[in-house]
Image (cartoon, rainbow, N blue to C red; front, side, top):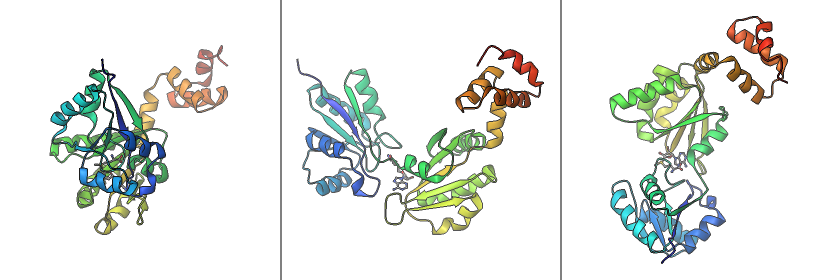
Length: 276
Ligand code: SAM
């Protein structure tokens, strides 16, 4: 019986063509087929890399039918490289359908890492990278959008959003209602000539919004009050473990928990008397 092929999820550049990895090039060269979100876009990359390969279109509107076709090929032993127009497949881009199906069919999936706009915007933003939530594009549907905005309002972690330039003003106006003085960073045109980070607050971004062009990621600081509220709700043991993970010593941990819980230090000390 034929060995099944492998589905490679290959990240491609988000602007600067030098951001393709050696491994990605090797996989694109050796794959039997490349499934591409927009074949014309991928052809430009392949021409640049001097790779000639059979391309199959795989986008949001044909995901179901193309998944079937690609699964047949994978079952015949063909290796398939899945790419999106830019960045990491499956991140606000097609991919989920075929990945689910491959898991069902016991077909091996291999991620081939590379550029991803949200990660690069986050790491250079200056906003906490410890914990974050990626919400993709805000929905257009009013009710869904309201729910997402509520989630951003109460987020106890850094929030990452993708946005299209023509929708930026609307999005910033909606955010103004909910993020008050939380820090916000707009990263645009990452890895390209006009790469820029605008770091400040929502009013600063609103003032500049009409001039902002290109591809955009927004990074929003966590709601600190919410973070504190959530922390206060944790049990004494949970707080102890979290402080311990942060590297605090026992004496300081006990002091902090006593303050958070508004109780006497000794009361907390008794609970942890046998712990180092
Ligand atoms: N899969 C991609 C990734 O890994 O980042 C994201 C695809 S999503 C359809 C496109 C959105 O990603 C854009 O609207 C923008 O929000 C963000 N994006 C992509 N490239 C970017 C870049 N060079 N600079 C800033 N944002 C970018």
